Image 1 (cartoon, rainbow, N blue to C red):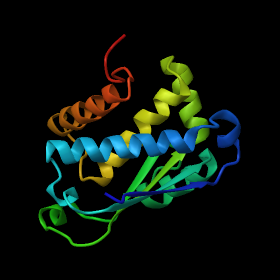
Image 2: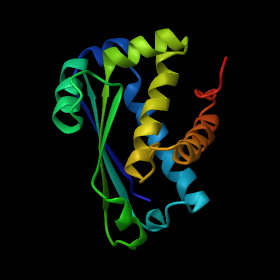
Image 3: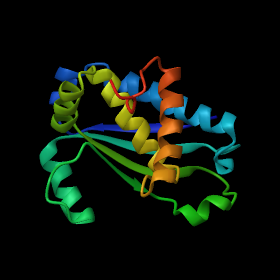
Amino acid sequence: MNDSLNILIEEPSWEKYFPDVEPTAQKVFGQVLSFMREQKNCGFLIGNDTAVNLSLSADSHVRELNNEFRGLDRPTNVLSFANIDAEDFDIKPEGLLELGDIIIALETMQKEALEQQVSLHDHFCHLFTHGLFHLLGYDHQNDAEATEMEGLETAVLKRLNIANPYQES
């Protein structure tokens, strides 16, 4: 497959605090797609190349986006903007699948990692995996959806040797 992850580092501090973020993001991207292709959970991925845009941003920018698109005037850890609507996942597309955009806020991610006592690396992998599953049509609006999405996330994170972030300590 010729999948493409386009990374834009909007906030220069990413390179200071997480110098290997780009190869880490590439690895997570590859693991999520290969896992979903193996599971055949997303049939539209089989035989198609995909593209995702990842913006590594700051709280200030994520706050603006969160306010504009979700009506929440505060930063959040990760935002996902899918290019494919859930009802379109049943259609077998041809050509490059541009799944959408993910934006991760550095300061919020750092604060959460500290609070949860996990490494920046592991928390980034979790947030990016979470964002990718949103682009693939998964959500957590109710308990059943949350359980399904969390199960998929933890399975991918396990492949990356990262502990289950949903497990109570």
